[in-house]
Length: 210
Image 1 (cartoon, rainbow, N blue to C red):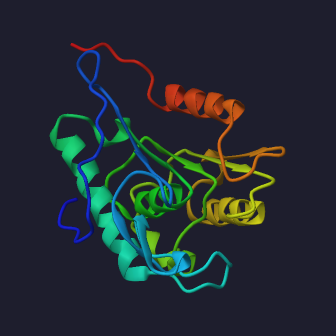
Image 2: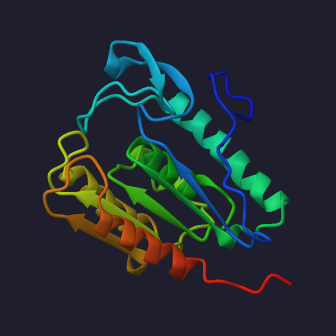
């Protein structure tokens, strides 16, 4: 995927029913379908992963090089959509768990002014590198929908709430929506999907395809 040395299949692209006027780039979580690499958390066994994960505690070391490399790959996907005629403000970046984490990091470090971010059950990687890393961010006013289950045993709910507070210090806090879901583990639920749908519809309203 754009110069990455991981085993990376091409992105799954859902064809537009008519001329595309917007795009949603959604990134998988650890162990889902996607690029594979050895993961330290999984005893170095290969599994679908955007970058290595050493641990799930707040003070765990992070794979800085891998995170930045994966982010550049996503930025290349965004650039390709722009080349295809989709304005950056009509592109929403999103993901679940590790994919949501990568979405937040990429949105804060890209120079493309995006339409928004959907961050599900995730955290902000390399959080100690901010605000320096986002000092010149084009997305200081972007809208973010962050969702997290309060019974998440893998990425604890407190990680999500702390991430939301950190995000509020980096971009316009009025544009950050943090939603919690009672009893939801590290997963999604219909109520959450309705919230995601409404967010996308609000940020990417239909326009006439001329």
